[in-house]
Amino acid sequence: MRISVIGCGYLGAVHAACMAELGHDVIGIDIDEHKIAQLAAGRAPFFEPGLPEVLERGMASGRLRFTTDISEASGSAVHFVAVGTPQIPGSDAADLRYVDASFSALLEHLSDGDLVVGKSTVPVGTAARLAELVENTGASLAWNPEFLREGFAVGDTLTPDRLVYGVRAGDDAAVAALDEVYAAAIAAGTPRLVTDYATAELVKVAANAFLATKISFINAMAEVAEATGADVTQLADAIGHDARIGRRFLNAGVGFGGGCLPKDIRGFMARADELGVGESLSFLRDVDAINLRRRERVVQLAIEELGGDVEGKRIAVLGLAFKPDSDDVRDSPALDIAARLRGLGALVSVTDPEAIETSRRVHPELNYVGSAEEAAADADAVLLLTEWRQFRELDPEAFGAGVGSRVIIDGRNVLDATRWRAAGWTYRGLGRP
Ligand code: UGA
Image (cartoon, rainbow, N blue to C red; front, side, top):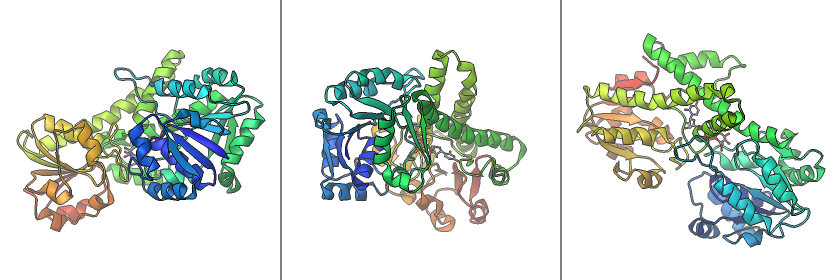
């Protein structure tokens, strides 16, 4: 199939490359010339495991091209819109300017019978509004939310755990076109749900709201554990054995960040307010608050361990990305904590396997170094804030040789406390005695 993908960020670039991998003929379009130049040269503009290989194969096959010229969308049968919907500064609501701009630019290049497919996460009601504009051109609209996780984006796109098509009632042609796009996944038995627009839009934010709630639930338990001497990691293991609860997304620590969960729960609350059902989602206010409290808790732990004041103290921060296997620092708890400690006068040395450049753009004041050992040289305390494998596997004895004092705060509860204590470290986890 001939496919256009409008928006080549974390979502769109992966989607375009994976559609070519599936055998489709794909044109990726973005207004960012730098990004398109990189993609056109076969380079991934951000760190995502497996993406460079898929890009390379797509470019070599001749089935994958990139351009800044939206008119090249014409001739495609299916047009995916995968642009960002960030939080509006000073508000909880999602900023739809990129969605609106993409649709208005695309409209004049649509032909009768084309299918436009929204992938961006949007406030419920957006698809119904855009459908009218699309239908005026003779094309039709579907909303097909994306559930990929950064770090696993290629696998999640090629083999999703479900497909959701939000379509106009009775639009069998839209369903058939999407089935052709996703023929491989459908042949593999991937569940596929056909819904109306509003349900498809809600599925996406409901899923992220549930995941955020699960993480904040366990972080709330961590707060209670801290007040009682209990161990939240054992608590999570124990309740996780109940199949109705499940152990995944029950890791207490510095909380969730990234370009999706935080802004999606806020955007969802803002939209619910507009719809007069704000009360139904008022618990998400607590989910957000619990999440943000964990960052402050780590700062307080550092102050406690450093004798009541961090000013002039050397602190090493391991990890800046919002999670491992990503260079994304949007709303990253790790970067936020590092910046707060720096703001309190600490001498903060930070490192991350992939996220140094993305962090430096936001917080140039931090001292960036290339390895955990360099960050920890003469440090008064070490904070592990993103659980990259290379940090989880640090040897407490060898690593301890270079530090000023053996104090570690494990913001992700991933280190073996007994082993680190045996090597002479003061070990502090979150929600652990
Ligand atoms: C999330 C969803 O998981 C995807 O399904 C969704 O498609 C995506 O948002 C999106 O809307 O585009 P992602 O932001 O890549 O994916 O990251 P997650 O793996 O969900 O992790 C989010 C945050 O929660 C990270 O900061 C992670 O460290 C944190 N987390 C996760 C915890 O603190 N504890 C856990 O147990 C799990």
